[in-house]
Length: 239
Image (cartoon, rainbow, N blue to C red; front, side, top):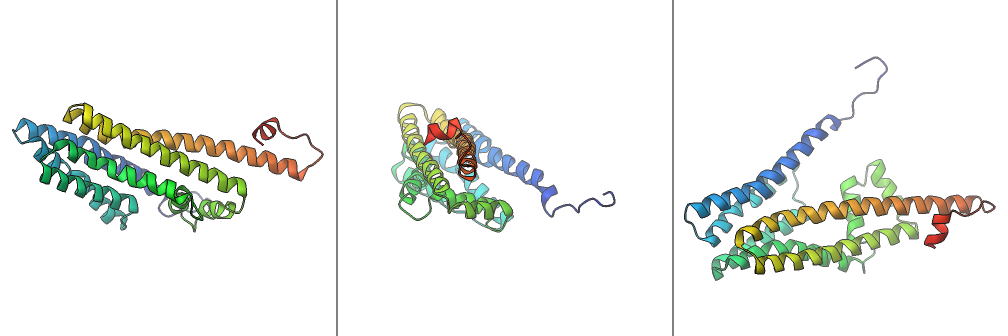
């Protein structure tokens, strides 16, 4: 460190390591691991239900490891774990492999209903998640909390929350169709991949929509500060 340079921020150097660990956890415990275990167990002669139940141990183990490492069990992890338990019990009792695979739809359904239900509350669910992820004590977190006073900001988060809720209802429907119309192996692969596909697609849309709303708010603020200036075309079109 050279003279006069600012001291490194605590924890900043660990951020790449944390991201790598999170990606590795997803690959090992949520995607590749369960699929590999299921394939090996089926090749060894185990029944479909037994192979699915045993392969479901890895995602549960991943949630537990994440809770120990991060020293907290987030609500999404609890919902996912509850879905695994429900699916395991249903599969063992009914001996129906497809019913076991439906367990993956439980967390998505709960999340979708939570998003849509939160639209009637004071603050929608995605806004609460954003504040929690940024940290209410950080500069970004305080900025988001302060911005809640603006009607346009509140409307944007309600739109985002509604879109996430509807999208995950669609994901649940797609998952159920695939489980009922394809082989167990394909349904298992689909059930592992589809949540990440939806999450990445919705995250990209959310960032794009957020930037659009931010620019629109800045244009409106500039127009209000200088009434004599011509209004921006984009702002007029969105009114």
